Image (cartoon, rainbow, N blue to C red):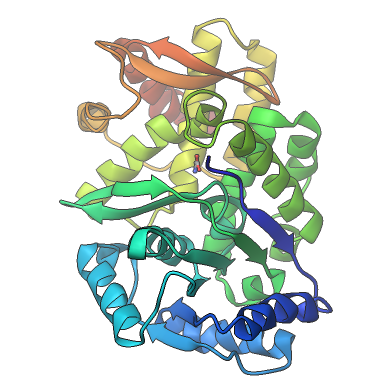
Length: 362
Ligand code: GLY
């Protein structure tokens, strides 16, 4: 049975806890490998080693891993290196990086010799509160994201808030959208805390207590349903339309809009759908619209392009017959899975976001 990973949110004084279990691997003569890319090798490995107060006794595997190389060729290179250094079934792979490294590292480890242990050290806020929790591992295939993969939770996920100090504001803000989602789907008080944040003081987003709240929400959901048969679908709120918008922007070379920004607009559109289906009152919808817009403004999409966005939903894994399967809201902090939405209503939601709300701002 797949179980949820053991998550450790560390502070500056907890390097010894990490060191002690790494030493245990050394004592058992198990080989440790560290997967990173040149950026995390340069920026994050020294932070980790400073915390441990020693150099890692491990074999480094440094490859130019990013979204465009999260593929089978990179897996081959990692597997080849593991073989070259005589990795065996007792070996352990530490993944030091953002969501991409956690995704591919988990996948490589889960397949190598039918599965070796992997430990995630997520270095971005997005990975700390989302990608490194819940055991989704995957690589891209035929230009489609995350098509090949499996559920394989890490033995441990170790969260070091120190890594976040090196991240650009845009990246933190992108993850903030996912934190807001956690509040909207599962915890009204957490949502209230988040909307009171002063976004100009970006350190407020990386507050350890907030990170912990998001981790708890995601862990609780995934522990009930790791394979996304029911409860885990709650995490899809904002993502059905958000992903379709993100894919459209990528197809039109406008990828400067972050994933989180697309998800935030997706959450506005899906809150609108919640109101259309009379699940959520207009007062509550307006609170959600107003707050999301204060962090994530509407960008321009031409009405002629709505068709292209909806076309991106065509192959959505959640589609049922002619309708689309959404997670919507029945309250702030309460999500409803398996809500059927018609194509026509998705167009209405796009008009609402990219025309009605835009007009309201004028
Ligand atoms: N990122 C959504 C999930 O892990 O299910």
